[in-house]
Length: 152
Image (tube, rainbow, N blue to C red):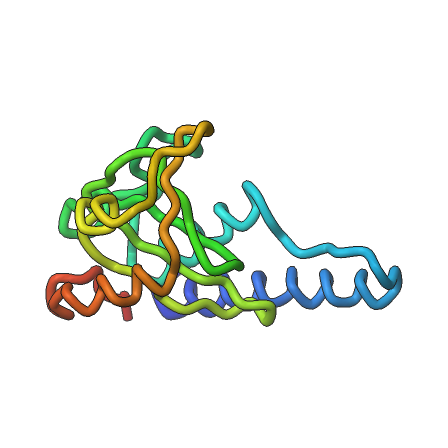
């Protein structure tokens, strides 16, 4: 399957997940069926692999989730809220915000050290949070030609 077909297939399936979520919420008002936790992380990894041509590692690999075509080790973070948390400093960090319609936006695509150096204090759970707003500002420091490129 070529990258464009893979991208479309992944995008369609994720949009279907969110459509089903909305249908369940309409059937059972007051209940929420939004993907979260491991599921949103896996959705982010699938989107990143299909859009950026990344080779995913085994689930729950330490620090890095994938290898880029140029050999960079990449940690992928996906969120539906306004922040992410890091538990270690990755070589490269890709942060995607997943929207309720199943689409996503790239919030950060840059060196892990740059993001790590701007995270908050280590919390009791061993993670350091950073807002998407802060990541977007940091991304402005990363030259476009150095970022992971979307596959076509």
